[in-house]
Structures are given as structure tokens and as C-alpha cells.
Image (cartoon, rainbow, N blue to C red; front, side):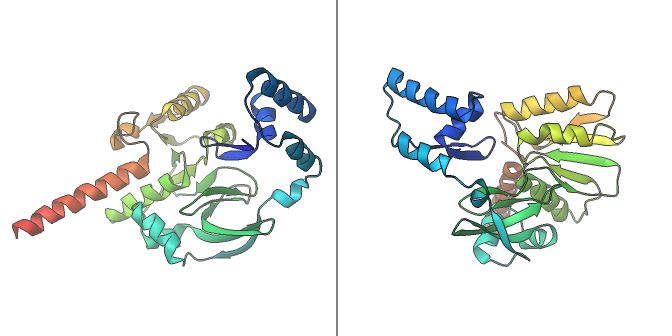
Length: 261
């Protein structure tokens, strides 16, 4: 009734923000839109007057996350969350930070990776957060090749898959952190002369982003590698799904071998 959350773009807030964003309206017009919407559809939007007053007195800076500490990953609950998703503690220690941050008087923390604008993409068992400016994440590699993932967890999953095969990564790994950052990636890689491999999600948004990159970076060597990991609408949703399913199969086979012995 009083708010919204868009799981695809990982953004949310009060309902007026949703109207401003989706209907492309200014603040005052959004208020009128909600009033008219409420009267025409008879949908109950509670406390509209109270929300309006809160927005008028809102200090935008006070709603932003403030980083209070950056540590080596050490919290067992955070580490266990990623381990359950197939990502080892060592991969976290080598590639991420434990980020503590505060929004107003509320304190949070999660495992995060720093993006190109100095912000962080952070996750914990309950929520996924963007701290500071939203941007892509780059892990630089020596080889003139780049692999593009949709989220931080997929990037870590790729590193984990290499580690399981006793391999080290030598490619540049890019996490879009949302398909809304697609234009930022295209701007940065417009003049890139190496190979580009795309490993985005298997849903419609991933398909659209894959197509846009392919059509925008004309003349470049681009390959969609999702089929290598059975990522599609009917298969694995993303690389982390592939990793988790791979581990389940390995554990099942190991149990069968142990039973035979």
C-alpha cells in the first residue's frame, strides 16, 4: 500500500517514487496521478497525505547508505549463505569485502564488491543492496578477453568453477549489477578490441540485454556462452544455478560411490 520494490532493477521506495519513475512524471504531477488513480479505481492507497508530507520534508542525503567499515569477510552467517550457494570462503576472501553500512539509524552489513564508481554491490541472506553510486564491477584480467555477467554472485560462481578445476582466472570479469547498467558497459567497451563472452541470465531480460550488446558493438567478436551452462528459460536461470546443480550432482554421485564401497 505504501511502497514498491522492483526485483529486476533492485530498486524500490515509496509509492510516489514508483509513479514518478514508471509514469515519467514530476513530483506534483505524481501526487495528482495517485489521487486520480485512487478515485477512479477505488484502490485503497493508505496515508497518501502523510506520505506527501514526509516527501516534502525528506532530506535526500539522510536516506543514502553510509559505509562505516570495510573488512575481510569473517562473519560466519554471511559466509555460510554464500557457501550454501556453492561459493567457498576462500573465493570470498580473495575477491570480496565485508561491508558495514548505515541508512539513517539502521545498521546493515553484507558481502560486497566495489564497482567502477566507488560504490558497492552487497548481499546478505535477507537483502541485496547498492551502496553509493550504481555502476558495473570489473575484475581485471591479463588476457584480452572479457566475460559479462548480470550479477556479482554469477561472477563469483565463475571463479569458483575455475577453482574447482585448479585454474586461475586470466580474463576480465564484468558484473552489470542490473541490466539497467547496460549502457554504461556499452560506453566503456565501445572501443574494446578483444573477445567478449556473454553469460547473462536465462530470462527475457537476459535475452534482450544479450541482443542489445551484440547489436550495439558491431564488428566485435562476441559470443553468447549461456548454452555451455544450460542457462535458458527452461534450464538454469543463471550461472549460480548451474554451479549449485553441478555440486548437487557431484554429491549425489559421491554418495552412490560410497554406498557401493
